Length: 334
Image 1: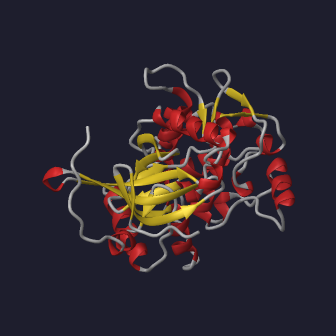
Image 2: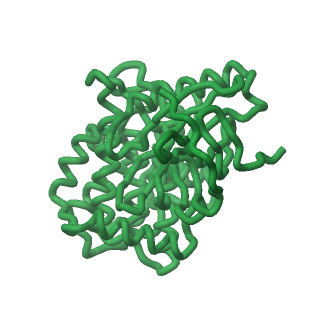
């Protein structure tokens, strides 16, 4: 049954449906208060059919607990969590803009890749996000959260030029610092590390492989291991069969090309030791002085062209504003 919007939901009003996944649906939601206070968020709630399923509720609670540890400028923040009418929900920072997938599509239509300086900026931001997720909890201790789905659709780009890693819904807490044993294959095959796809031990270096594929695609305009089907793609990744990145971007900084090539090595031992080591490699790559401003302008341009997409944590400014209707402010809640 379709959701009729706007819909009151606890302290929030749901004003636009962003999407629906395997166990949850997401909305642009607004919480209003006295004095014209208004907060726009992304609200994610369990689908009604799964509300009574303990396993699904447990997974949702686990996502909320893991995500609550991650307070970092380049990670989309979890703001609230609760239950309304027996339905669990969490609210996330709402990013006004597009995802990296839409930006890559914009450049691909022009048979181009991202400018190297912009790709380096995106790579440095995501490396910082992963470095934090892999190593620190709210008290500065080792938390070890592996994302397991680093891909363009989970990289959000704001109209202000911010870069945010989103959707830790299938993230996994490491059983001990440095590694986890994956029991279920999750994520997108073209970005999947070979060891993870083969059911072997998954580590922070598996996320780095995925980031390497993303950055290769940013620069080359194509993914490195794509083949006729998923199995063939995984086999190419396992053997490291790819065109050298330099063949696509011969004028890109050598340090950037070498960093990306190291990230997508089939053997995890040959990749950077951790995201901090990747940040050190990218230190040698210069960025345009106003790269964040330039990215913001580009995001707004792509959005005007109608190439933006919706996913948890992301909303088009135009689409979201079109669904709003005037309403009286609700009393503020503590």
